[in-house]
Image (tube, rainbow, N blue to C red; front, side, top):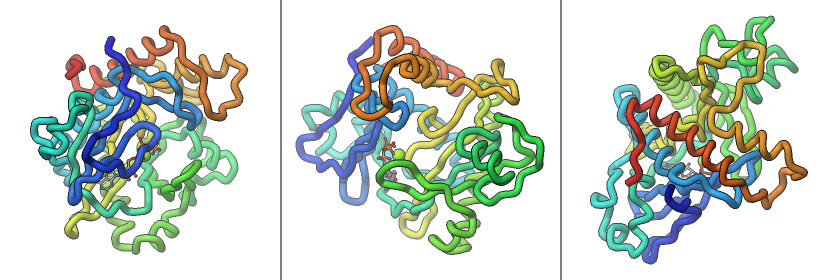
Length: 300
Ligand SMILES: Nc1ncnc2c1ncn2[C@@H]1O[C@H](COP(=O)(O)OP(=O)(O)OP(=O)(O)O)[C@@H](O)[C@H]1O
Ligand SMILES: [Mg+2]
């Protein structure tokens, strides 16, 4: 197992943003998005990374971009360091980028995160228990935790720069970006979800819900950010799925269980993770890759 890559700096390219997992570098008309091996739990970045996680997630995302490109075009321009601009290629740390970075078209990202839910979990379930609806969408009575919904629902949220994203209704989304665009992204997001869910099912995975981001670039609507990774989606193991029961998180269950057993207040800094938790978590990411892509992950 290689050492985890916890952060990336480039000598001659300015860093635009450092998220919980990814670092974004500015290249003018393009961005370089690099996924590190950082992992967060309860919204806190752990001091311990999961080796190869960033590469696994990047390659899962690239797989989906390609598979779903007939539904909507995506932002990726290049995935190999050799095809990146010279200023990146020739950087002393460019070795760290292999397999975990994408050169993308810089888009004007829409301020609405497009969440699609096909199963009732997380805040969708909480909302339903309190109101019988989720984000203003009426749902049939008698649904259980983790129930499959009759139709996927679009539950947009705003992109909060600090803390939790906030769920909004469909009409609030339309007020923010206009009715026409809101309708378009809802339709595209649902079609992406349904196509991805069908593939996931064939791989023994349930895609319970997922988040997409869209952007505009030269007047064109593009799928941006990452897509359909375990970080942006809830995957469940189909074999273990029981409606009414809280399904185990596919990737973060070992970490959550470990953290719940500690006397930790869920505020930063997070505790160092033991080797066996790291190894078991890494194995889940590799399993997601193996199942979805139908081949073994190989480190670059
Ligand atoms: N093609 C694109 N053009 C412009 N911005 C983009 C594009 N693709 C993604 N982005 C933006 O890049 C940023 C990715 O970094 P972000 O901070 O979300 O990282 P992260 O690892 O997901 O962390 P967090 O969990 O904090 O969101 C997001 O703000 C996203 O909207
Ligand atoms: Mg993000």
